[in-house]
Length: 241
Image (cartoon, rainbow, N blue to C red):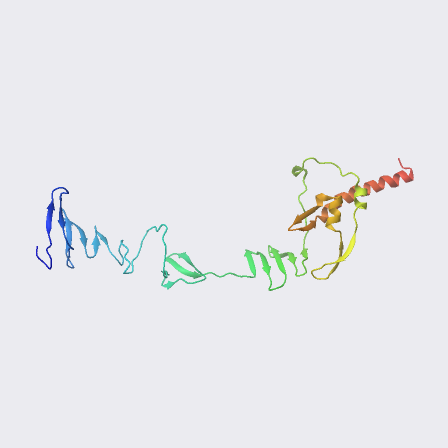
């Protein structure tokens, strides 16, 4: 075949095929058939449409995918859904008619589930409500105020090696009640010094980030036995047997 340069269509016995040395141009409306079945045209490949509305996605036209799974895809540019393009603060929401971009609304002052919620006022108190009722308040002076009782699990089912506290009175006498001012805000208060308690009752002192905290409520157990010790001493002085 003669053109600007020689071209050829040759039969290959080794490969059992026709070999063409240059491009093959098929006019619009024409196709290539195999055994009477169309396999290639300007709009279809193996019976599947190319481009808009088709099953073969192209880069140069809008394509519609139906019941397709995209695995490990990387999206560049914008993604349009429900007639609008996504932007910061939006997420894809599935609806009865497809998907759409929906604005993600976050209330920075409230975490709620039904009528139970945590409320954070601007630079003010944090409150906890349960079933619509105030449960607790964390105020800006580092105080926690609860409406009901504060309890701790104390069942025998949770404990091993249970023994009675000995020398309760001696332990209590080893503690020192103090008055003090907080360095952070200057507020006056009373209590104990964790480091001093640790020397007598180390079980009640916990350290986090170099700061020691004290389980004040557990001192009640020591006070109970201290009262018993004191009662025994009083009875001895009174000659009670």
